[in-house]
Length: 195
Image 1 (tube, one colour):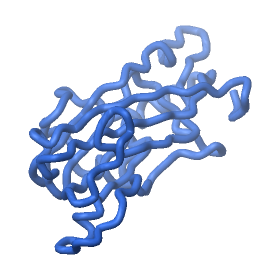
Image 2 (tube, helix red, strand yellow):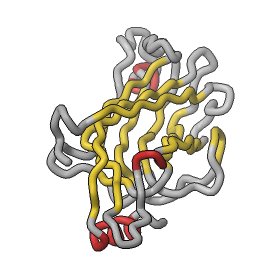
Image 3 (tube, helix red, strand yellow):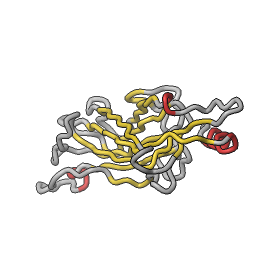
Image 4 (spheres, helix red, strand yellow):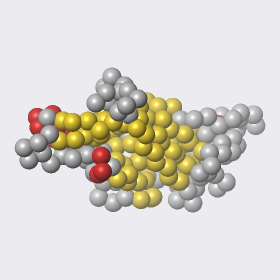
């Protein structure tokens, strides 16, 4: 399959990281997204199927309607999508390790960071408007990330605790296609996507 109108479809996910849980630095979350309907790593004499993720878009908001974060509230986080298999999922976990939130992770699909205006300009009364996340790792139309595992995890870790007025709601939109994989490519991807 290729990156074209005929083959590409969208998958979306959204999760609220509540300020009550993420009120200090170093709090982690790992939220599962089930993609088992799009992958088939069991070949048994036939070709396998993977989920090619070509592009990822994300938005950081104060609520599920997309409202901007309050500019005077503190908060910062690194977050993204990974195929690392976490044994415990949910908010307030402690499973994220090195190098999960860095470009050194072979299991990371997409990574970004968000720093609220108040955290960027600490002590300023003119903090401006909240901005979206800054991506530092993402797949491309030419080289998609091919998922062969049943679950993608939304991972999140605070670097500055959130103020009490705002939570962070992160929504993702992935541009995907199901692709056929020969056994050697599938086996290579399965080895790579095993933590």
